[in-house]
Picture 1 (cartoon, rainbow, N blue to C red):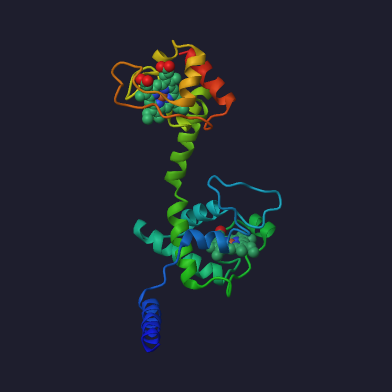
Picture 2: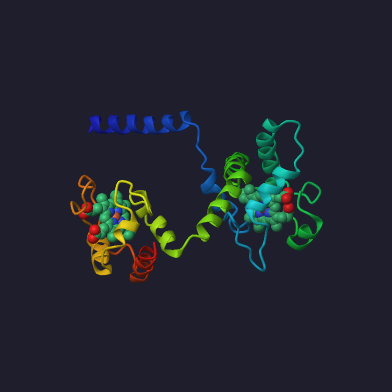
Length: 230
Ligand code: HEC
Ligand code: HEC
């Protein structure tokens, strides 16, 4: 009995001191979703709604970055975080970077004092600053735009990872789709479903994985039609 109690006490002590020694880690992304998403849309690019309660977080991040005055680029992140910490707890029309019209239509943000702590806002602001990055966003839009103009079959082959092994008209670790397209549609479908190994000379060491259930029959049709036109 005595031993049991000692063990319990020691365990408790470890837990208690362990907690006070470790600094609390705040997860900015989680906190943002938990504390801010009820008003601010968090998507990038953002979804906008008719009766939205607040500007999307991407818009907030971009225009605070753009309009905030800084003496050097390295000041930007710390100033941004300070602004967030202040604004979320003590919002004021005079401090807002929102244009007059938007302010009038949204109304000034209600103070989140009591709902979120200053340390939590710090973690949120750090995450927001890094995640809503203009260059990253533009790059993402360019990649998306380039993807959108691809033939549908190539889009599917990209999304499903086929092109990591197959080239379109050049072989990679697997034969090119142009070569493969000479086979019958029936055979092609069969291999997509069940995978294959050892049929193609020079590719014996690679296995074509089975994709059963991973593509709809419509996707398979589009893929094969695309291959046949290569
Ligand atoms: C109850 C709705 C609501 C919640 C919850 C809310 N906001 Fe806002 N927020 C708004 C509105 C409305 C505006 C636009 C008007 C303004 O600038 O005050 C705004 C503006 C802001 C601005 C200022 C943008 C500028 O242009 O100056 C920041 C920064 C901001 N919010 C951060 C946050 C963060 C971080 C959270 C979560 C901790 C949060 N907000 C939670 C409604 C909300
Ligand atoms: C991990 C690499 C890998 C991935 C990913 C992969 N394949 Fe393959 N694929 C191969 C290899 C290797 C072969 C040659 C197999 C053989 O020799 O039997 C092959 C062969 C094929 C064939 C040949 C059919 C035949 O009868 O000879 C088709 C069709 C095919 N793949 C389609 C696809 C499609 C569509 C995808 C994406 C949904 C895909 N593959 C993804 C490696 C891959």
